[in-house]
Image (cartoon, rainbow over all chains, first blue to last red):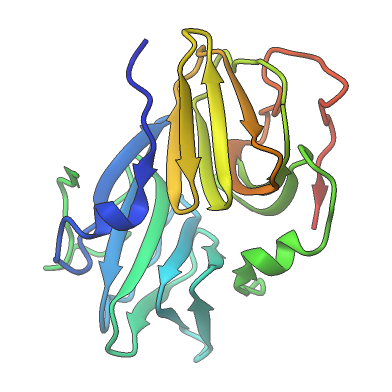
Length: 124
Length: 124
């Protein structure tokens, strides 16, 4: 049997510093389980074919929408953004810890090819 | 635009008491986001086609395997069980809060039709 071991989320977050650079911590059902540190502004983007899930483990995540609404997602809260909805994740200067589960094919910047786009994600 | 609102996990857990009865709190990409309260022993089962993800938000989850190994999953830890691997979730008498993301077709008891099997899950 393949080794089945628990993954400690905070331990994994302690292993890297880069912001807006998702790291893979597990895989299941053709999806990756990823963690990401978020700080300040990300890029406006949408995902054509995939709903996006944010699970906030530390800090307060802000998500701007094109109708001028901003949704605040606190630690212990989850936000699902339906496919096609343009949004901009950001934080108020603090570092936010985020847990994601995404199809293996998903790019975190969605429809945008940006300097922040990471095309080959690392496992940690 | 469809309303996009944060989901507070602990608030959702406060809305029900039943153990081993997953509740749906969101949907994305043909998966459900679910929460479940776990206490004492569940049934031995495996999932033929789906890897299983446990995200422990409160308490300590124990998972028994047929090779006599027991894996302890603490609050803030995640465990992925590959498809086909028989396992029994249980707790040491305490209530454990678990977050799951599963294909819409998944039954929580996997290959087993048991009195604990819930075939029609409720949204909360």
